Image 1 (cartoon, rainbow, N blue to C red):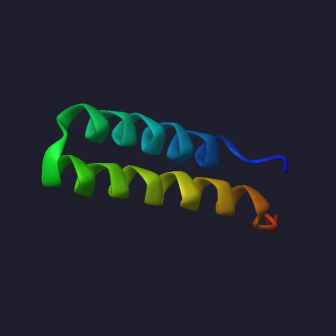
Image 2 (cartoon, rainbow, N blue to C red):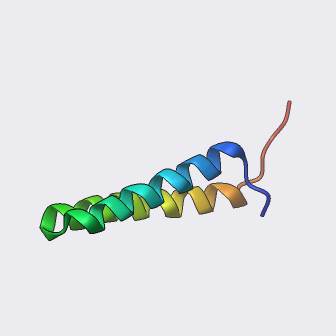
Length: 54
């Protein structure tokens, strides 16, 4: 799992948004947390995607 710079940025941004959602609390916070966790999952999956160089 090498990962590109973009993958790490998406993963880090998702972690920050998920943390912010936990601080907000309530149903709005749950939505923000889910949005952040989705970005974390996409960042991790992007690291396993093979890169194509032309």
